[in-house]
Length: 118
Length: 110
Image (cartoon, rainbow over all chains, first blue to last red; front, side):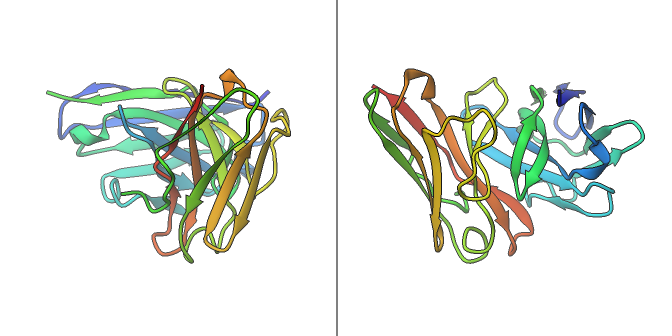
């Protein structure tokens, strides 16, 4: 059974940093692209970032480019999202997902809440 | 302002059919396959359509997808109260080199 478990969310002050983790199991993690997607309170889904199965290619939404960094450790079956210079509008539930094909994400984690507030 | 445009809300009675549109452009919908998601806040999104018109295993054939040019459509027949949720279209955008979602459509089953 495919499982994705996010962790690392919490309350952080504006300008602070957090690192989210997404632990994967039940599939061949090293052969799939992976995504981060978020949903802010009262807003819709927003794509954040993706990383190629071997980690050699990454992409970011303009809203996080230069502040967030996605990475993965295929030996640990884990993907990460390093979030720096956090702003209030980064407050959201962050989901990791396994890519089936072109943003067809067929498995998701349960989400982790990031709150940026003073 | 989302790159992909969806109606904010649609509604229909139980048992009826509803369609949700998703309008984009040449750099996204025309060029790449479209996926559709069902989402309730606080829960994980659920993929209901991928590659424009394919259903993942476990998704009933009441859900269908189509695409023409720069627009895509999600159809749901035999509406049930359990279908009430927010629905999103999504795809890749070559101009942005980023994934893009529509703004979401709230489905109400009256």
